Length: 327
Image (cartoon, rainbow, N blue to C red):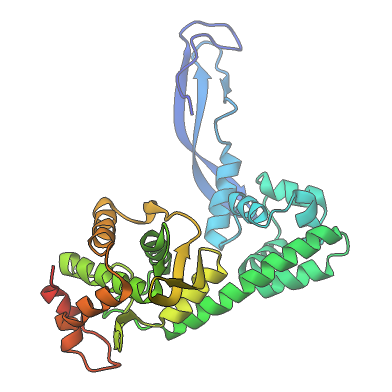
């Protein structure tokens, strides 16, 4: 926003008489009062005050504060949700059973009613609810309905898998699962030609344990178990199924030389904004260190780690063994 004072007052043409005023203003929204910051220009000569188009109106700010206080859907969130569904305002109105003008007003900052806010939050928060709305939307074009239902059924499957994974996966001591970050770790480690599941599990192990060694906490929040082919992330099969359902990776049965098994390949590049510079460096270093190793080679390497030799079969691996990693 350009808050540089005007050289000439647009009302009286006075030169050098306009200055910026920053103050607070009380605005009432649904019988609740909010003190909101407001900027405007004032002329010392004629006494007129005015705002430019890029100065946010105090009522708009008050409505935003009201929504925040009551946990209501913000206009930007409504717009982002509609676009994530690939819908126009007309199509979203058909799904929700509202007029197009209503959707337009809410997206442009008009304060929604409590009933409409509840309807939006229910549709946004439950794929099953949204599926029922789409199925019963009489004014929705058949091709839009078909496309949207297919997408929502896929999301419903992913939601069920996420619930199963989160409820099943064991976490590192005193840590919570960082699923968004874990997704990006898997993507970064499986970018390129892909990697066998056995090897990917070891790369994840080394990434989390090396990070713990350096910073005192894991990268993903996952716990690891000792299984016959080496350390593996807790509930890793559910994890990879979830990422596949979300369209982030693909799993395929392949044969590379004498090696046959399930290979994971990233379908998009990792979003490195989820990591700091040191974390990216650590992941790339681990990927490079084991780049030429086969799945069986890295399994044998992991079997020589204290984390493997001092953990009973099937038990969780204590993160204290990170201090004794071989590199």
